[in-house]
Image: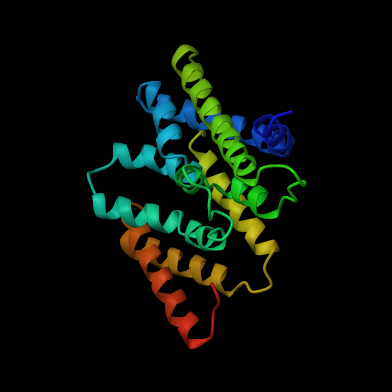
Length: 230
């Protein structure tokens, strides 16, 4: 068995649980995108070129709203800011990867990071090809799900009412998971209070950006003061 097949055979079983989740969420995203009036090509190309699940859901709303590049940039930065810390922790692992490194950086989602960071790679398995296959397989699952969802949404007529809640459910699940895995709930409570205050003050159409900026400013302030640890 050559090194490519060996690396694939090692990586593939580890990605199977992610396959099931990505196919389901990707199809939900594809159906939602097409139901908003976009071509079936939109979920395919956005999942291929953006490859940031929660941000792709948000992008559907951004494309339908008023042109606001600054707001879109800040929102994308806040939603995906955790990847800054992922990237720092992977600097050593990505050394010497050559042409694979740019794609490994681009395709590093939460699930790929988890496998590539924690998996015990057997002796004799090429580390670079292992991480490349993990990343590529996970993106393939997402692109396939999004494309199938787009095709399904464009060919089958059904009631998509409530499908928008998929994104809200995704964020709620992430919030609950982080709450359960952390002993310090101050950041979560601070975020909830600031968001509620901004919602009451700015209204549902304008509250998101100021609340994100205030949350970021608060965390930075208390981080340097030694208080709340984000």
